[in-house]
Image 1 (tube, rainbow, N blue to C red):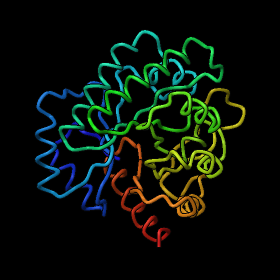
Image 2 (cartoon, rainbow, N blue to C red):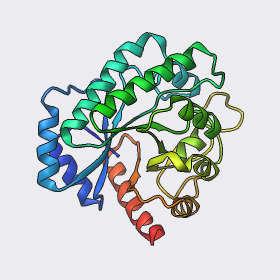
Image 3 (cartoon, helix red, strand yellow):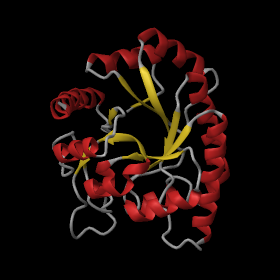
Length: 268
């Protein structure tokens, strides 16, 4: 996964230089989209690079700790719902114009109580987003991690849209402490349309509300060999999208390069 914002051709060439052949493009909440699709479409075609998903982020989101995530991320915060729904449609249209077939995002912590007003509001919002994506001939994927697999599955079924899918991130299950990622993958397998290959460690004990720490692929608690074997067992045929979020771009690209080599070895 990589983020738009820099020169499209340079970004793609940098990814290709470390062995990436396709990926997911992240769209920050403050990124101007006017005219952006034409530039990205031209670069993608020229470099023969495939983007499988556009990942939608939003202004005001923070992943500092779990309480902050609950209060700022996705569709849950009341004050930003209208703005974020509009932005989601804009990113969907950007993706359509680039020829990108799927949209994904963190919708936030889904309440377990289906009568909770936030649950109902977010369910209806996801339905509208799915319907907009359907007009663009796209799927819409929910990112995993901020709730347990069973809660996400129940919400998924309740939304009841044929173009809804799941973007499975194994590390998020660990970072948020919501369950074993391989078991969760088994629970959600029928609906997984894309994956992140990301690693991390569990939240530190004795620090309420803390998130776990992301790690380079193969150096965390996911167990990448076990994860890849599970993907094989559920007959997942899609791309393995490496996600590595670290501020130092040189280190990030080095970690992605090592991740590519690890996945090539594990994939066999």
